[in-house]
Length: 408
Picture 1 (spheres, one colour):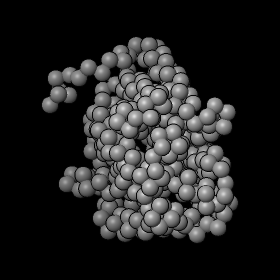
Picture 2 (cartoon, rainbow, N blue to C red):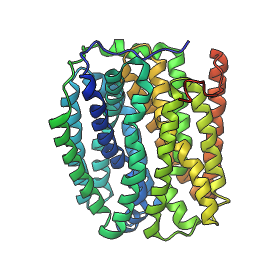
Picture 3 (cartoon, rainbow, N blue to C red):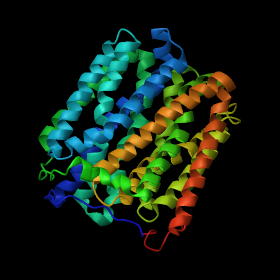
């Protein structure tokens, strides 16, 4: 039986303010995700400027991801009692400062520090923002509310990362980070002025929150997220390099291709939010299968711009859909401690992101750039089999046939 989301007993915002509050969280998510993933589009330029190899530069992605994985759960549990508006403002101030530090970094070590600092608070944001969004709209619309916050990911993929890549070719990668610092400050002001205050969450003991780890079904869902995101980022971490070297796209045009990848992702975000409330495991299995197909066919189709665009369309839809699908799936598997559950999924996702960057880099060094699509597809197939096994144990059908209600 699927668990529903449980919410802390807090006073919700007025109904008219809930939609705008979720929109603010989505914009904050846009800035945060752009901060996390902008570096993927900057890897070629950054590696050239700092005189390091692409695989070494790619480990900045691993550093960020593993920091999220290790520090996210304890920090979220420690900060879960703080009033949400105050917490979100503090997070955006930290992101502004760290992006400014990245822009001034003279070497890979200072840049690594500038990536480490915001990684500490990213999972705190995702765990508490997901819980806050579902709290604002009620139980029955929790999945779609979380997917609306996750529109920030789709927007970052559509605008933030590609435009950052374009900006890196126009004003340098440092200028791209300065732009993010300014956006973070703007978001701080918007949250301070417009975000309503919610009742302060009740303080819950750390050990009591961690008791969700005693639920084997919940742990299985967290592990599934690790495998899904490993598949996603084995190839996506090096997508800019793939477009440059394998498809022969000029560096100045890579950002526009990434923008197209993000644009189609808007459809994926909607589809993920549409289906996940009905069948979280089924949605995971279907979208990760589509993901694997898209990543695999992108390699043989890279020689044709038209067919490469088709492959990236398949890839992009599934890639973006899996963000809200995995987040809601893990939160619905938890019986309590929703903020911590959401953060544990973020930690699992970042474990997968880090593993994906490592596996992708290893594949490039030993099998060539063309190998990453096939390696990533193989990991995606493993995730499909895991989801199918979990659904069989629970006797939950994987079918995603829309009901009459879904068609309206």
